[in-house]
Image 1 (tube, rainbow over the protein chains, first blue to last red):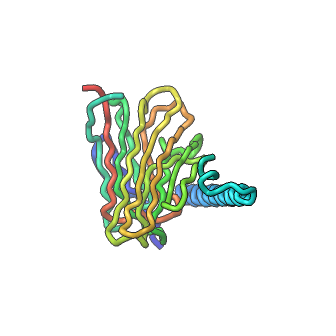
Image 2: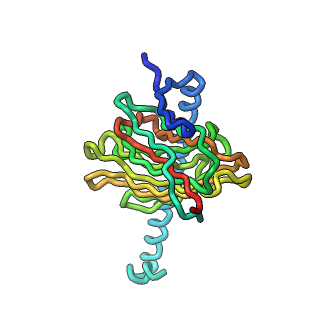
Image 3: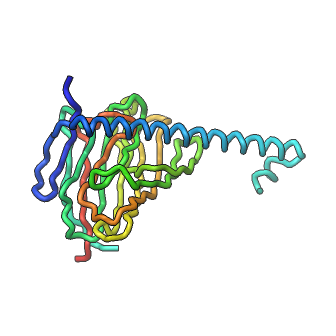
Length: 74
Length: 169
């Protein structure tokens, strides 16, 4: 199986090369990828929890008798 | 802010695609840097974010991000730096996403902040917009910039990235 490659531009020469990733770079990329996925999952969970809390708060305000315009004005 | 732009280098990805785009040996002769990209990846989604690292290091990176996919606006913090947006494999064929990153004072001995804006290109209802404030907590001068798809997609042929140096004329 071919190794993934990177495109490298040497700004001092203007020469662009295509270079195979080393095993170390591939391993690091996998770690970064896993971390990114974990970060994304955390962010999405936080956003979902926040949206649920907002919906709950709006429902409680409506139950108290506030109109949609009054809630929007808060 | 410096006022004159100079093109340093442009990368164009060839037919085999690439896992990353690297600019190395960035000259220290400018005040600021601007990196503009047009990217598509193989990720099986309509978009894919690009992570950014300096000098080959993935440490000391933090980020504040504000993004929306049209249904909600989300603010996040994270331990990466964002370096752009790419259209994914399910985006409209031949669509490439546009991004720009401004990196002031890239040779200073202070920590390096950068600001970035991005928009996924997709001729459909799904699209993503984001602005990012990145910080690299390092005093080293930036000599290398690497863009890496966040979810493991391969950068597709015809993707481009152009690095500009900026200084007072």
